[in-house]
Image (tube, rainbow, N blue to C red; front, side, top):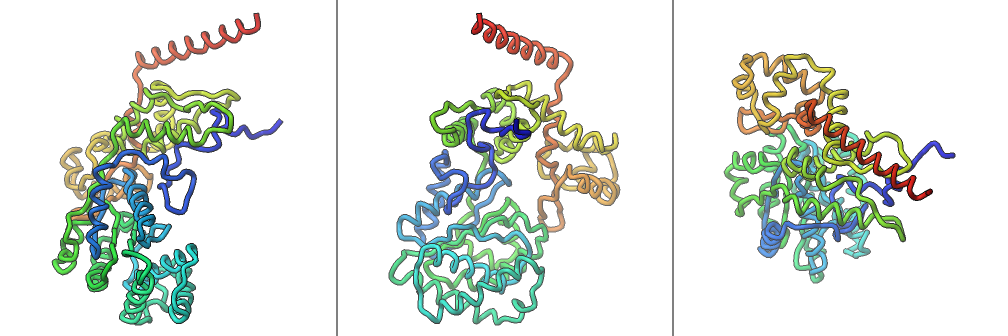
Length: 427
C-alpha cells in the first residue's frame, strides 16, 4: 500500500482548486473560463486601451485579483490585433532605467519567438544579444554590464522594436508591469519613473499598465513631471462580492474534476461565508486559508468537507501553534489592538496601545516583523505603514466553550448518521 494518499483525489479532483497564482495568457492550471465578474473594471481597462498611447495604473490590495483581471482583458485585446506579451513583466525589485528597457525588450523578444513573428535580421540580432543579459538581472543586484550601456541607444532600440512589430500587423502594443508593491524602497520607484518618464511619454501606440498597491499613485504624484504623463486616474480594484467568490470556486471545482466522476467541494458555503467575512473578500487570502484547512485535516481515505466550525478550529489551532505560542503577552496585546486596523503607522499603533512611538518603532515592530506576523506595506512621504499578515487574522476565529460544544455535537451527529447509513447498507 502506498504511503502517499493524494489529497485532491479524495474529492474526485485532479488538483488544488485553491491555487493562488493569477490566471495567465500562456495557460496554467486553468484558462479564463473560470474568470468571474469585474464587468465595470473590464470596461475601464478597455477604454484605456482604446485611447492608444497612454499610461495607466491599476491598484488595489495584494490578492484582490488585479493581475488576473488585466491578463483577462489583455487576452481579449490580443484577439483583436493588439500585441501583448503572454507573461507579465515583473518589477518586483529596485531596477535602473537600463534594466527597465532590457527587461521590456526581453519580454517582447520571448513573445515574438512564441508567436513565431519575424522582424528584420538586424533587430533580431540586437534582441538576441540583449536577451542573454536578462539572466544577469535575475542573479545580480547591480550588473555592471547593464549600467555601462547607453540608455539613449537602448530606448531607440525599443522604439524601433515597437515600430517593426506594429507595422502593419497590430493596432498597438500593450505592456503589463506587475508587482510594483513588492518594491518597498519608495525612493527606487520614485527614481525609476523619473528616469523613464520621457520614454513612456514619447512612445506612440503603446499602452503601459503598472500594477501595484494604493501607495503607487501617491508616489507618482510626488514628481510633477511624471504625474503629467498619467492623464487618467488610476483604476482601483476592490474585493469581489461573496457570490462571485462562490461562483469562482464552483467553476474551479468543476473544471478540475476527475474524468467521469462527480466532484466533491472540499468546503461548504458556510465555511466560505466565515472566511469571506474574516478576509474582507480578499480572494487570495480566502484561497490560502482553504488550502491550509485541507492540509490540517486528519488522514482519511474519504473526503472530509470543511464546514463553518472546522474552518475555525483548524485555522485557529494553526495560527496558535505557528505564531501566537511564540509571542510574548505584550506582543499579543499590541497585535490584538491593531488586527482590524488595516495599514497603520507606528504613531497610530503607539496611540492605540499606549506605548511610546520610540518603543513601537525600534523595539516591537522589528520583532514582530522577524516573527512574520506584521508586514511593511509602503510609505507616504515620511509615514511608513504596517499591517498584520493575513494568517494572523485566523486568531479571530477562536471559539468559546459554547461554540466548541456545539461544533462537537454537530460532528458527532454527522458521524453517527454516516455510520448508521453504512450499517444499513450491509443489513
